[in-house]
Length: 332
Image (cartoon, rainbow, N blue to C red; front, side):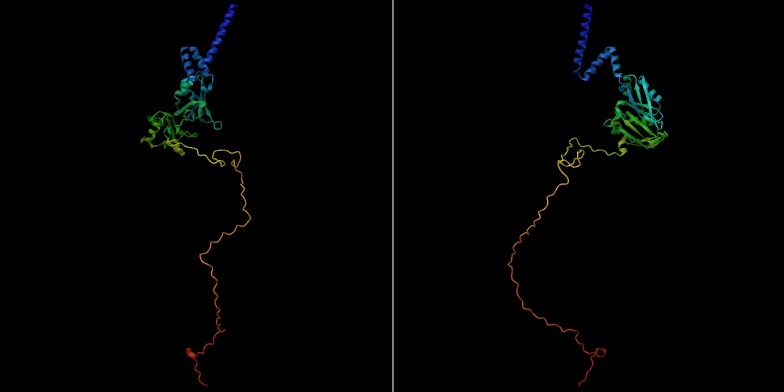
């Protein structure tokens, strides 16, 4: 009987100790908890195994998205390239259902989370002449490449010879800095080079060195090297100086403002059509005339004059003789 009471007291004491520890751990920050568990895991192997088991329970931390694959890369080739980091639970290249051809990307799911973390330390892998890039599948299709300076790190390479492969392209531009992603663009149907490619550096400085390099001859041709965004023809937004702060201008109430939705078609505060007051029917008086500088004078009477009327008809003409001479009439 005493042994049972003692065992119960020990159990109660253990429970109270776990509750006390939980109350102590709850206020701690995430970084403090990570440091504490990492120290305990390095000292006690049982705790380390428990941490690994909990971390690998959710496949979202073990599944990788791999993009930039060649059109002829198979699922077996993909798994062979990533199995160096650990045991693979599942791996496959995604194919188009209609055409049956590869879509250029695939997925790798490791059995343990630490294998996925090891693969992410070197995300770029050369697979069948193409530099493929991996990231966590939960980050989306673009993954870690969606950074603010991506537009300054990604280059368009044009004018490539058909004999230039992705490996040759990476070796040529690798002298300027570490490359994050890059390959020659190939046609899906014929698997032939389309005459251009892309190279994404890990730093903006390396991309600038590649653009400024005067030696731009690859495969016996002079190639074109410029930013990928400028090749698309996208307008570059001008940046304001650091001293200039954009200020939103307030608009008068009742007028529609761009970007704001209104519950009705008419702006708030006004009704349409607006009524206009009618003009009064009474006539307006004429403005007063200014007084003249001179006095008004009476009209001066004039005597009527009779005009002598001309006789009617044509006056008789004197008889004329020959050659304009008048007739001679003798006396009678």
